Image (cartoon, helix red, strand yellow):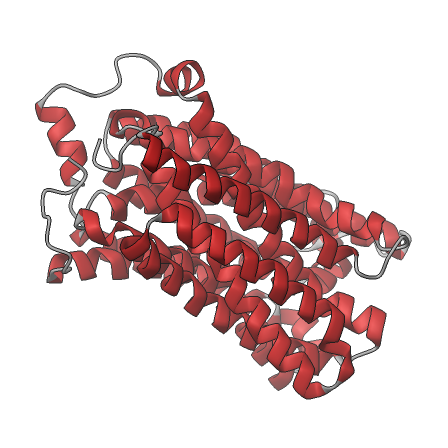
Length: 434
């Protein structure tokens, strides 16, 4: 059983587990994303001063993207051992693997000190960060889902996803604070290092706090029954769980691309297309991110009450409507910008359903590997290609981002219809309590 309790209440240990998992996830996402908020300064410091600006920008974002490409390998390796030797060990290792490279980034010498070694070391550390985040997110979902009562798995997964989103918001707030209180020269001299040092130190603290977490009851039972995967977990999921992989990858596309377009890309698009002040778009973006956190928790609560299929169908419809209204009306006035962006952020919260579906899709013996493979491969593909695709569509229509999110909402709705139908047919992927 995934959880022996049938009552829906969380006990003190459940809340502790969920809080420490969400805190660690938020800090890891902060560490992973803080790079992008200081990309301009990093580009100036880590590359030769005489290269064209477009090349500097491309190389800087290339190093940022390398973190996404490293996710599948790191995630699959960590998941393999998570299914073989225990969830807790990998859960602690992932945060250490994120904290140490983040600390090292803050201490790196720059180009004028060590030459070409500077960007190469930066790339290496970024790859290590990518490997760590590839293990953290699936590991966290599995860890909390196998700890909490079965009727509260949706809430736990939604809250954890909200925690990851809070890491993005924290990165944005820290970057805003540093750029507000420091002049540009001070930021370039030493200010850009501060958020990396903060992230690394907080990560080590979070790792220390995770000492008080216990191995999941599900993994302990599998050990006692000697029911751990008898073949390579990756081989098992590719041979026996192709349908689960497809569903999980489609939903990861929904999750990754909606956050990339609506949360990460939208402020720059608003500034460029409609000439809205940067400060205004970033304030609205912070509100939208807060609403996304609320939406993730709300989606998780609703999944426990109504089931994943129904919530995904309704949530996808709202996502299509609210995101369309945002891209259509946001430029009309300041009030329209804040109201429509807040609604769009809330509607993107439908992604809080995604981890529930994924932990339901794979049996416990290969659950970590199944989620990690599907999530990380899909994230590497769609997280990386979405900005390129949307940018290429922009000359055709200024509503390209809205059409893209609308297409994702349609995919989410269709997956929701299928999930809802499978319950009535008795055609399940794998029950959550398998």
